Length: 587
Image 1 (tube, rainbow, N blue to C red):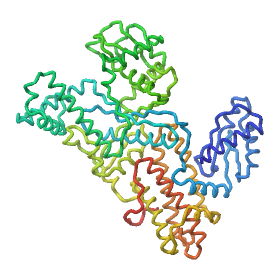
Image 2 (spheres, one colour):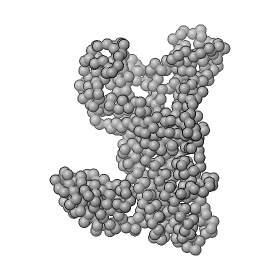
Image 3 (cartoon, rainbow, N blue to C red):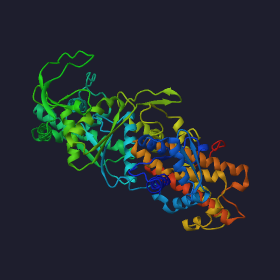
Image 4 (cartoon, one colour):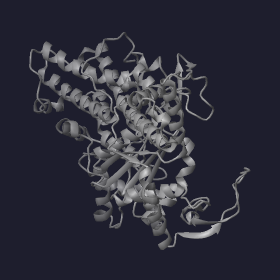
C-alpha cells in the first residue's frame, strides 16, 4: 500500500492509453518540498519532453488534463518548467487511513526485493579487542539497513568477515602470551610498543594459565604460539559477539578469512585462475606509489588485475614477490565465495577511512561476477563523543578508545541505536552522553518513544472515561468520515509517506531517513495533541460523541502502528508507557 507507486501507475496509464506514449517504464512521484505546492508532485513531463523533443510546459499541461478527471484528485497545478503538482480529495485520504489501520504491523511492508538474495557485511572489525564506538555506528547502519531490506522483500544474510589471517592476529597472540606469563606470576613492567596494551587481555592470560598451567612455557615455541593464537582469537570473538549482542545485533554468518588460505590458499588460487581464464589478468609493471617514498618498493613484473578497465584508478597486484597472494586477491576470493553462495547483491558497510576501497571493490565485482551481481558500498564518518559538551577521554580498560559496551551500558541500547542514525552516514556524528539521556524534545529517541507511549495512554484514557473495552480495528474503521480537522488530515498525509520512505531508504542506502521520519511524525502528533489543550473540540476523547472518539482513536492507532513499525526496524523499543515529564514537550 504505497500511494506514490499507485499514482506512478495511474500516470503510466495516462501516458500509454490516453496520450499514446509507449515504453515509459519509470515515473517518479514524490512529496513536494513546499506543502503549498500540493501533496504529490512529478517531473515526468520534463523527462519525456526532452526525449520526445517537445515543450515540457505544454506536455505537463496535457498530462494535467487527464489527471484532473481522476475521481481521487481534487486539484492539479502546473509549475514551470513542467512540474505537475497534485492535491487529493478528502475521501482518498480517509480510505488511505482505513488501509493503514487494516494493515497494522504490515503497513509499509512490500515485495519490492522479489526475494533477491542480499549479503550485508558490516562491522568486520579486526578480532584483536572489544569493539569501539566507531564500530558502533557501522554496526547500527548495517543492521538497520538489513532490517529494511527484509521488510522490503529481500532475502538477507547479515555477515561478519573475520580478519584472522593477517599479522594483527599474530600480534594479538604475542600480547596474550605476555598476559599469560603475567598470570603465572611474572612481573609485567611495560607492554612493548607494537603490542596491544588493553586490560581486556588480562582475562585471556588468566584463562590460558588456568587451562594450561605453565606447560606453554616448556612447549615447542611454534606449537605454543598456535595454541595461544587460537585461544586468544576465540576469546576476542566471544567478546565481540557479546558486545554486538548488547547492541541488539546478531549476525547470521561469521566468515573466517583463514578459510580462504586453507589448503595452500586453494580458494584464492581458484579465483585468480578463473580471472586469468577470462582475460582479466596480465603480467606487467606498476609505477611507484604517487606522492610517497616506499623504501621496499621494487620495479618488477607482477600478476595484475585489469582493474582500470573496470573503473579503478590503477591495476591491482594479485601475487607478491615471494609468491604469496595479496590482500586484494583475498578480497576477490571472498567476493567470489559470496557470489558462489548465490548472493545477487553484496552490500559493504565501511568506515570513511576505507572509502578508497570502493573502486577496487567495484572492479572485483565486475571481474568476478561479469556484472551479474550488484555491489553497494555505504561509508560512514566518525563518531565524536562528548559529555555536557566536553570531549570524552579515552577508556582505561581498552587502552586507547571508548568501547561500544561502555556507551551502551551508560545510555542504553535504544539511545545508541537511534542516535547513530540521527545524521547522514557521510556526516560526522556528535554523541553527547548527557543529551541522549534527557527527557526532552531535543532528545530524539525519547521524543519518538514518548509519542508511542502517548498513543497507548490515549487509548487507556478513552476506555476509562468512556467506560468501554478497547475497540477492535473494525470498530475504529466505522466512523473515519468524522475526521475533518486540517491537523488530522496532515497526520494522515504524513502516515501515507511511510511506505515510500521505506522504499527510498532501501534504494538509496540511507537508513537515517527512517529516524528523521519518525521524529517528524512524532513532532506532528505531539503538536496535534497539544492543540487539544487549547481547544477542547480537538481532543481525541470526546465524552459526548462516541463515534468521533472512535474515529480519532483510529488515527491514534495508525500513528501507533507506524511508530511501532519504524522503531522495530531501528531495533528500538516501542514502549506502552513512560514517566510523565514537564511542560514544553509538545511545543
